[in-house]
Image 1 (cartoon, rainbow, N blue to C red):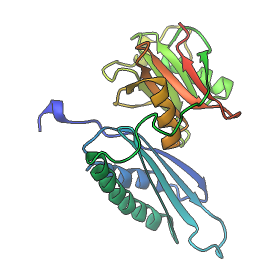
Image 2: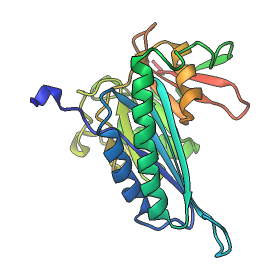
Image 3: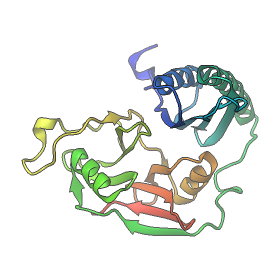
Image 4: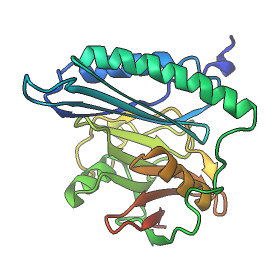
Length: 255
């Protein structure tokens, strides 16, 4: 396989709740990546939820769930077990089976299509991103935390590429960009007035290009907290999420 054929590893976001062992998140990420490694299509989003119920009397207290967006098709799996490692192993096996079935359905024309049922008639509220027109990733993270948001859409001050920073579910932060070839500025390149640099995991997968209706479909089909994409109508980065009042909000760059 030549260099141009090598795909970056899909990003796997892991959320933990309850008395989950400290190494469970990385173990789950490794197992899910192993299942995703056999997928021949782009994996646009993966979210894993691990939860552990307290109390020795609880039957099958360890729960593991995964939602995967395979090129616009949602694939889900959920298992329960006596221990978290056992639940993660079962989740990997179940996910692998469902990915294989989804692949077969996709090649035979099965499964829903964007806009076919999910998301039709949904009202979308539009607003521009809060803050300066251009920021560094560090400034975007500090603004996100100051406002108590889970994400911040911004235009990178160094590269001019529309980007988003967000919490990764484990107390850290990640950066995704509309173009995968854009480079995040090094800490030494930050302006003197910028806040201290922050540690960022960087997604190597560019934001998918789609229309707003397809983004609505993807948000509802995958259960992800937001969809970051390149709007086909404007060719700019955009972010769609579900507000607390149930409406969908489309956030566009400030400039």
